Amino acid sequence: MSDDATTQGLHVPDALTWEAVTGRVRALVGEAFADDGPANLIDGEWQAVGTPTEQISPNDGSSLGTMLKVDSATATDAVQRAAQTHRAWAATELDERRRGVSAALDAMEGARDDLALLLSWEIGKPWKAACSDVDRCISGVRWYVDEIEGMLSRDVEGAPAKRVPLEGPVSNIASWNYPMSVQVHAELVQLLAGNGVVAKTPTQGGWMTLTVAHALMVREGLPATLLSGDGSELSDALIRSPEIGALAFVGGRSNGGKVAAQLADTGKRHMLEQEGLNSWGVWDFSDWESFSEILQKGFEYAKQRCTAYPRFVVQRDLVDQFLATYMPVLDGVRFGHPVAVDPGGEGVDDLPALDFGPLISAGKAEELDESVAEALRHGAVPLYRGQRESGRFLPGQDTSSYHAPVAMLAPPGASRLMHEEPFGPVDSIVVVDTEAEFLAQMNASNGSLVASIASDDAAKAERLAEQVQAFKVGINKLRSRGDKDEAFGGRGESWKGAFVGGEYLVQAVTEGPPGENLYGNFPGYHRYPAT
Image 1 (cartoon, helix red, strand yellow):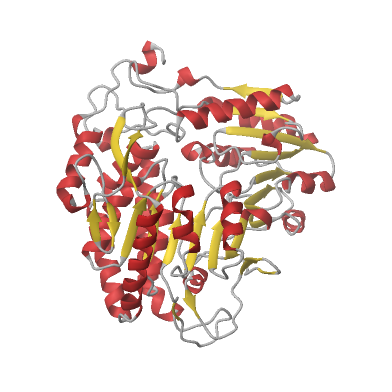
Image 2: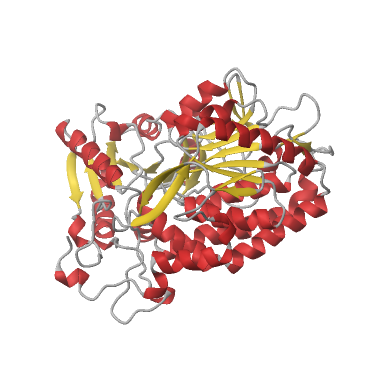
């Protein structure tokens, strides 16, 4: 529990409570709700089918109502129905597809604040980060609306060619952390390209936000299916069904590996984002003032994102200067209940500027504690261990999903943190003496999505970057998933299948000339676009 100085007077304004926000979205899209929560979207209709399962907010342990989890038979039937509507949508003129997608975006923009507040309650995003998730979805897809005609008239090499929808709908299985800017964004581009879409709501959070977004999509005639359920129950229907034309997956390596195994004998088009241990390398560097700003930004959303940097590989001669910059950043990180305002606060303008809120669950916080304890047992040196009690909390609230920043020096090879992404505010620092050591430690996880090198010597940094096994490598800057025309993918075990972003996203969900080879990380060959 927080001390009185931290909690005194904090409250959730009436207009920002879960009951108030869900009351407003029920009034907006009432057809999408059953008695105690969202229904499932099957064949264009909202159906109150499935087993009720209570959902809990990571913010304070409060109940958010129930998710209706469907079974495998229901999901299989839904996919078969989606395949029928896909065929009709694939024959729809592009202008009509653009009209429907644009109208859905307009509706989402009108509901923007409530969509962001749902994210704050469901997955613990602070207000600024939640708004960014919604805004990036809307602005990103609007870019595709403007550019789609040209993208559908070129092949992967840029030559003139007509691209057509896939033979079946695209199945979308995404993690809970970016429901709008990753999952809904991808679906809307898939729809724009002429495909029907099938999506699974993450079991850990985001199902209410996705329900509202999909209700606004379906009102504009977009052929979308939205199902809630456990991945183990629905995997055959959403991955192996012969009706599925492609699979877009975002998640961890363990689940991604299982998905890849299920796809092995199907020949299906796929885009599997499986994370990796993204690293910052520091070599021959002196601009510590700028680096401080980068470090602060890195703690956004508690590093619960695929492009977070939880690992720093530092040249031995620079360790003292690195720590002198890094440790004050840890002291300045602000975390707490994302919807709690100071005394007198009444609305979204009064929400605090937090670096992060809770982790996605109390179980995840416990998992991080276990990983830290394991590393320390094997010999890691604790540099910083923040206290949960320093967070900004409501008086007496459940704080079990929160985790303060932690930093460790030299986690040994026997510990998970040496090779795996923690997906939380736990950093590891590795000290190296040679360039060979530097590259080995940057590449510890057999491929990653992003990496960066901080160096005053740009030529040396570029040379080192060529040997870093990440899809994007930044020189003195963060790399991210990107928006609009920026390609995204991974190397090694961090990604399987076609790359996405810009034209690559459209190419991944359309068919071009016979025999074309898409850019991607596929078994047997690797083709990487300029990044």
